[in-house]
Structures are given as C-alpha cells and as structure tokens.
Length: 258
Image 1 (cartoon, helix red, strand yellow):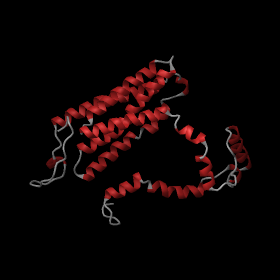
Image 2 (cartoon, one colour):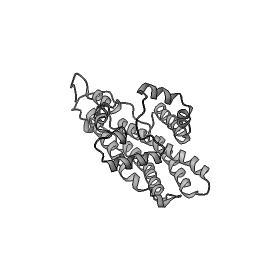
Image 3 (cartoon, helix red, strand yellow):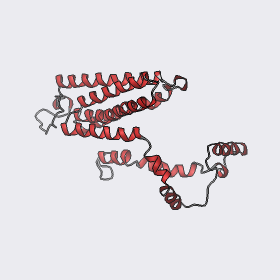
Image 4 (cartoon, one colour):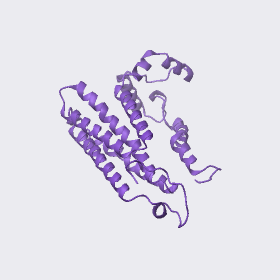
C-alpha cells in the first residue's frame, strides 16, 4: 500500500487497524443483513420466531422495537444512573488499567522493556497460582485475579514494543514481524474457550494451569531474548538491509539489549 492514494503504508495500516475502516465498512453490510427483532424478521419461520421471542422474554429483554428515535434512546440511556453505575462496578478493569499505565509509562521513561515484562509476568504468575489454590476466600481470589490479569495485559503491549525496538529496520520487516507475532498471540481466542470448562469450578485448574505456564514462559522468553540480543546485536548491515558503506541513524538500544 506504499504511496497508494498519496499515503505511506503506515498511514494505511493506521486507518485500517486503529480507526477501524474495515469494521465501519462491514457495519453497513451488517445493517442490512442483521435482524432487529424476531417479530419483524422475515426470513424466520413462525416456529423460529416464536422460539426467539420466548428466549428474549425469559431474559427480560424486549422482543420488538419501540417508537423511540436513536437520539431519544441515547439520551434515555445516558440519563439513567444505572448505566453509569454498571460502568464503575468492574474493579478488575479499573485497577488493571492503572497498573498497566504505570508499568508502560515506566517502561517508556526508562527505555527498558525486558525487565518490566519479567516483573509483570512474575506478578501475574504468582497471583494466578494464589487464585488457583485459594478457593475458600473469594475476596482474596478476586484481588489477586486483578493483579494476574494486569500482568497479562501489561506484558502484551510491552512485548510488541520490545519487538519494534529490536527489529527496527527495515520498516517493512518490522511491520511483518509485528503482524506475525500479534497474529499468533491472538490464537488464544481459539483455545481459550476450551480450557475453562464449567465442571472445573471453582478452582478452574485447567485454565489457570495453562495461564500460569504461559506467564512463566513469558518470564523465561523475555530473559532469553534479553541475553541473546545482547550477545548477538541487531546489525543493520546484516539484518537491516543496508548496503556496504551506507550510514543511518541507529535508535538508542533498550537497556539490557545491544
């Protein structure tokens, strides 16, 4: 996509991934093919429509549209205190957000990634072990689950930043590397739903065992990469695509790296 429409490739990536141009485009298609309510969905049979309406009624959900406009429904929602109450009753996300921001800002200020990753992965590993083994106190489990989740969510962006700081040239190689790593990381959505079966409650040993193993592996891999990148520096002439005699500005290396 380089120079297509007078835009560099990075801008196309920014528009498509971070501004969700593809998602927005798909939403127009969804507006046509997705049904609003069972009672006015033409392609449902009478039996299917009746079944869908019954399910909605069991969940205390409306089964048909009212006469409110989009603006009226928006205003009605934001004026209801219940909407705002449900937004602040998720402490695990609120606390994790604070922890992740502090960690990532610290990593940026110190220009250091691997040690921050190892610290957060260690916190996550220990916290998840406590959550899996302490089943008699839900308050303790929830508190440490917050730290466990925060560790996971902090390691994710820092790992991609670490990769970007390590493979920094050429830009095309860096972009592909980030894409490959991110794609493989998202495979968790494939197996994640299968490692938390309901019959493993309340300890959920399979799910926590996998999570603990992965975070422990994160500690080992971050340390290994730190050692290897220090021993085998990323040389632009060999790995970065520069020809002999060409000079360029080399970014400041990560602390603990080359």
